[in-house]
Length: 248
Image (cartoon, rainbow, N blue to C red; front, side, top):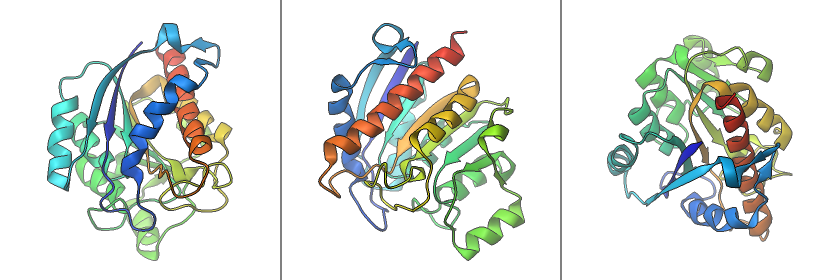
């Protein structure tokens, strides 16, 4: 199966811990070091990755324009490496997915153009009835009221597997419990386990049209190799599940 990997080195609106712009390089350096036989899939034989390189935009309009140039004519399945969560808006603007699913500790529904408001901006783009949240465990009062006002769906894995529309999945890595991955922009306790995130990916895999991995923030502690390996293994596992779902 053909994949197109694009790194977006953008973290200008990170509010707590910056550094997500350095994640694509860290992930790429780890890929050759991780096992590529995953979930009974030999990624060395089944995954053909076209590396689209990186973009390093300085501001939001440049982010949108450069993402469009990279992805607008791409036929392979996009895997986007952030970067902060703001990048998902640029990808959604190019792909115009039927449904946007966000695995995230936060709803990101603040009324701004930062990583804290990215899901709200995507809702403006594709409609709030096409926004689905999974793994949320921390929000502002404003976001809580907005979720109820717009009837935004928060789904369990059991609900996700019933989706049939084309899905763009965004994985903000703070959805994981910080005991597993502390190196994120805004860590929150009581997060999902690695297997739970993978279960969610598996539920959506038949309908996925793109996936991103955002908010990994290396160099915020001393375990860079461990943290990067965990993120890379999740990416490999996601590719394996997508291959199994798409090639049945």
